[in-house]
Length: 75
Image (cartoon, rainbow, N blue to C red; front, side, top):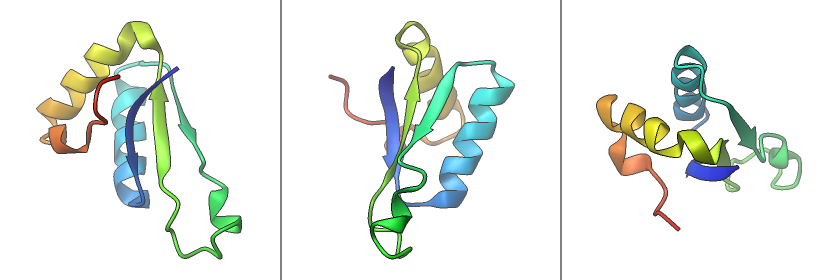
């Protein structure tokens, strides 16, 4: 899995999750339960990981949704 994006914004993560589900792109939201460690204040970002073969398609999907600024820097 490759990182598509990371954010502290739960609503944004939920929206991206829905976009990827609708596009049938295999993905995983990592660190979703890390709030236990930070006292539920949301300082630890969640990461959206996608199948490496679909990474470019996922990036294009985010750009089309005007979320290109949220895409993690390419490795």
